[in-house]
Every structure is written in C-alpha cells, then in structure tokens.
Length: 120
Image (cartoon, rainbow, N blue to C red; front, top):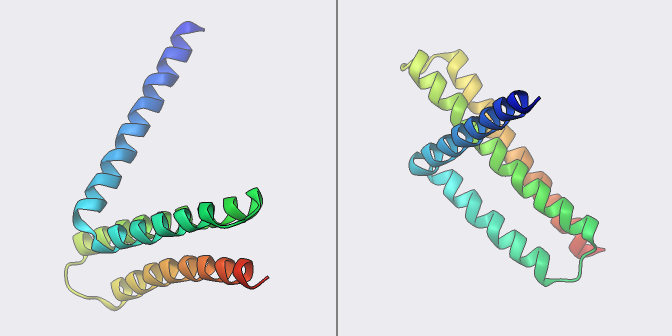
C-alpha cells in the first residue's frame, strides 16, 4: 500500500512539473497568454473588491481560468500545426482559426458574466 501511494505521489509530482514546464514555455513565447493573465488578474481583483456572492465570484474566477486554458490549448494547436505543416495549408489555417475562436468565445463568456453581474 505504501509503495502504491509513493508511486502515485511521484506521478503527481511529475504531472505538476510537466504542467509548470508547459506554462513557462507558453509564457515565454506567447504575448497573448501574458495579456490574458493580466486581464485575469484585474478581473479577479475587481471580483474581490465589489460586493459579489461567493457563487458569482467563483463564476468570474472560473471563467477567467478557462480563458487561460483556452489560450494554452490554442498555443498547443498552433505549435503543433507549425511543426507538422510549416507552410500555411487550408487545413492548418482552419485549425488555427478555430483555436482563436475558442479563446474569443471563452473571453466573451467572461464578458457576458461580468455584464450580467454588473447590470443586475
């Protein structure tokens, strides 16, 4: 039992390390990730400085994290596309455009949440 727990802890540690390496690689190369992180921090500061319920605050924070996750996924798509097909192929353009739309839609969801909360 102890060996199983130790193996799982090591596996979890490696997962955390790989996630951190992914974040830092994207942070170093993607200005849009840095911009969305700043927007996310400002949004979180606003969420904690105005009168919101815990559920409303959780919604704003969660959507902000989803925007960052979408940006990371888009970064992964673009990196893989550029590696596999350096020339702009119509299929690669479609993948990149869909990734960009994914980020835009999650950001729009955050904006809608803020609008609903602020106007109600």
